Image (cartoon, rainbow, N blue to C red):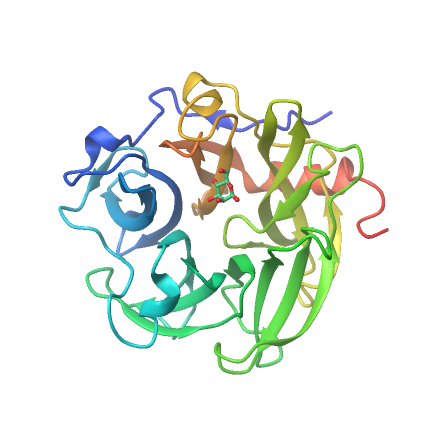
Length: 314
Ligand code: BMA
């Protein structure tokens, strides 16, 4: 039996609101990438009005981060996107697309619901907002860092009871227009992720397939519990799921994961694969702080292959 646990960093949490040089109530749910030898987090913060913005932190070792003096991405106040970002921007994922610099996908909230925005940066100094790439209601978009048959591919999660709360796949020739959407993974009944699931970290390529670390929610008498799990997608056809680990890989256990802005939450928007096969997984604890831990890519693959659950879609 493989031990399916993330090795938590002993000095978690790695970022709290005290580390942020501007006034915020939380630091959580960061997208992560390595750029020019530096580890970069684009994290979400609640302001004291309850709405969210996105800040940036940098590190030379992936564990000790320093936060930039100013926020990185905030709601537009004018222009075509302002109306759709009015209530805040959340949960940014980073995709290092070869030749396309870094694609950022984040949730924008407004009186019209939640939808996904696409932005781009080359240097993490400036950022260009490109387009709204979904209608309402849609959250949690991760783009695969490679094209398939000349198409961009993403995992997404309609924010609705209809499907319900399942992971879908969509395709695009130009990153703006998406279609051919279909559901590929559903919550499993009486499982740790039975209430809803959604894409988490940008998928990581291995020889055995794409590793996708996702989140799942279980409903309890005292609210939902957010945990993380892992799925393995086919290298050539990511709509094909080779296996989903039956057990969660991380659950709220430490005090700052159990209690905070929203209790009992571990939620990931980013992971970084090192050359030696180690994965640095970043997650928000209780929607309040940032944490990091490690696991090897081969362990995650093995969990999907050797301890896989049954039906993915019933
Ligand atoms: C989800 C999102 C996440 C958050 C989680 C737990 O719906 O809002 O950003 O971490 O709930 O509150």
